[in-house]
Image 1: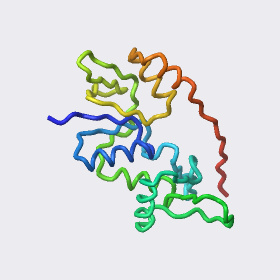
Image 2: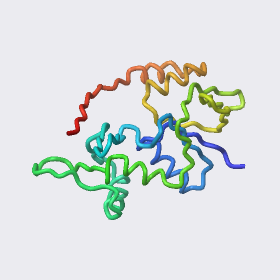
Image 3: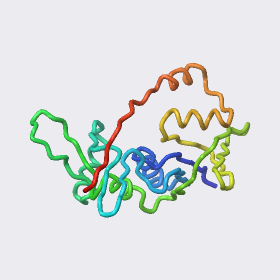
Image 4: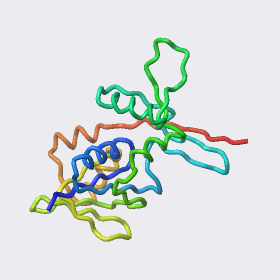
Length: 186
């Protein structure tokens, strides 16, 4: 039987990893706590108004992702961010809204939405046990965290998983800068 991989988080990074594993016929499941995919590329609809409440745009600094961007652009999933500045790096937006890219990547992937992971535990044999609120335990051979570092560490802590001291110290130093956004509609 194939090993099972659980990916926690259905944002862009989690979906890209899931796509890559699926292309290799890996046995996997993506767990997402929200009602939809996209993470920080989320879109909210209020009446007829559409708000990209996460990222306004994204940039690409990896040659492998550049090749995918070209394909996505041909398919109409992404478009260049309009800019007049000649020295500005290429910026991209998803279409028709920022969740458009995530929704395209999520197609035909085994994603369980509204799956709030409460803890992860490591067993002596090396397998993992994932505790999901209101659901049966999920077992996996591997876990890939694509959730923000503080959330991932909290899940490990809840399952009493001890990381090597240096690794933990480095991860504890990861900091996120908050961004406030205002959505207004007429």
